[in-house]
Image 1 (cartoon, rainbow, N blue to C red):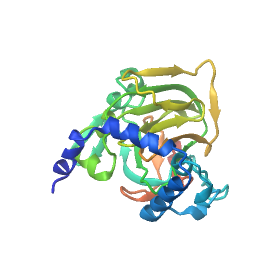
Image 2: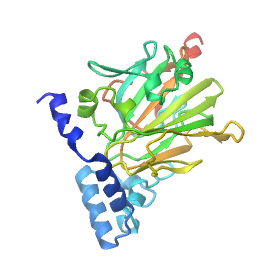
Image 3: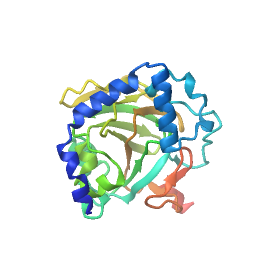
Image 4: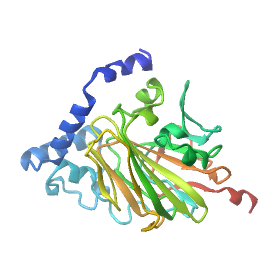
Length: 286
């Protein structure tokens, strides 16, 4: 079956209703029911609870509490690199932005302007730059951390669809990451701007950042923006910046000439929070 045919049912599913229902179940404090649900999930997806700060599933009062569990302090040491991987997951795609086009999958590209909610001026800052798209599967740790030190200057909530973001859907739905609901976070760093986009998906109950809390819900159907230029939020490399309540995808954008990716990186390769993602562009000349 082709990828496009495989994703056809997603166009018909009541994705918003399913996501609201999943959010209710995930936030429910259900005692023994919650523990059974977590035990099933751990077995089904082979979640490594030995890495969790609290490995005892009986101590999680809701599925959300389990899903956003912190790791042991030494579970993800940071590599000595200019840029470290911000999540546990897999590399969906990465590489150079061709003018304003980001490669999604064979036969599919989407524009930086579309990804950033129609902000052409912001998108222009990343023309011919670099991108990385990282997929978080259900078994992964679901907090997102900083690839480098940075200062939050803006955050934009962009309403959209709630397609799945698994590899099959990425190959079958044109412009997937620029169509789904997302939270765009703009940072300024010592080496210039970068963007970290949290992309929602079917049954991703909500997305949250450490400086704001839960961004969605509410799902108002309109773009919402927060400006932090007068009240900057400074975050260090490796520090938590946000989390997904159920799994999804992160897209990073860097300016032209700014990034040289880890030569060990390859599409579909598994990655871990804290491993070397890349070096600044001028490292090529050192």
